Length: 113
Length: 111
Image (cartoon, rainbow over the protein chains, first blue to last red):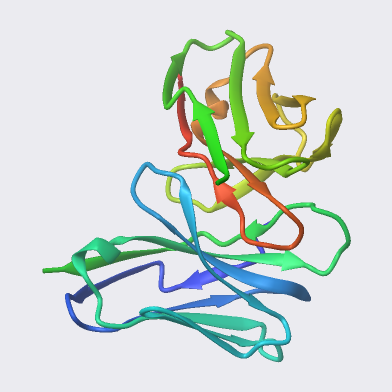
């Protein structure tokens, strides 16, 4: 079953505005990751935040994690047309081993020029 | 640097035909390997993962199987494709609890 659920399912904003996407999950995690997928392509890893971290930055990306609420947000500042893509959160559970990430259904982001 | 190759990029196969998708990783050893499937408008579903040669774990019962004949080779197979096997198949690798690196995907259409 899906672990992460992104919100909103789709988002359309003007170039230069900030885009915020949210993710909720259900079980304990070791870390949470965000990925970007351009149409018909593979996923690209953006950022990983560990369960003991609350905020992380990478360029124009800012990720927050609230383990008490089992939620995370991805903020893209000063959006560009090239940011148009689907964004997925994925959780790495606390179970041992390399048993795979659990992905949400994604948020489709459209940046209008 | 590490790279991951997945082919073919697109594939159209008739119902009942066999399937073989191949994924290879370069520049690393003993990676964890994964096969995911993405249905249209949906998230990714983990199909198989492998932590070593010959070690395959299946997440969901289905018409597919996976094999890892070499350390950096992961193969997704089917003996007889179903219409419901259509989708976008993604191979990925990771080391430990880190980010995954995905291949470029294979768009499979079963007709």
